[in-house]
Length: 187
Image (tube, rainbow, N blue to C red):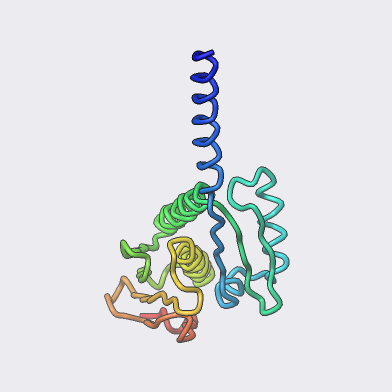
């Protein structure tokens, strides 16, 4: 009889530990503001659908949906949040590698609050602008996954002409619009 009580006690203890770990999986809500969504070139609804299609196994989210204001909401657990952080850090590293192959230098601050793009005027404007847009949007999304307030986030962008070592454009999104024309990049 004493042995049965011990087994029962062990069973209850194990069960309680398992249940406690189940209830501690808190749902984390991340919002991508409309500005960040618009950087992607697709509507919020289109982006949410693309994300769902690429995440059928729920590695990155439990749910994702577009909001009426054009923002996107993602719901996830801590493990999924870490997966998203790693994914977007990897995206940024890949952007930097591709940029380097196109003779563009990208320098991202350790806190992901600023980025500098350097290239000569010989680099095609379309290649340069694609690098700026893709890298900046990945950094902005990563900021959200790192806990940045979607209503109060900023990314300082500096564009430097590597031929003259002069600043072509500089500003902070979403507060300022940063447009670059081919003329801006000429010597």
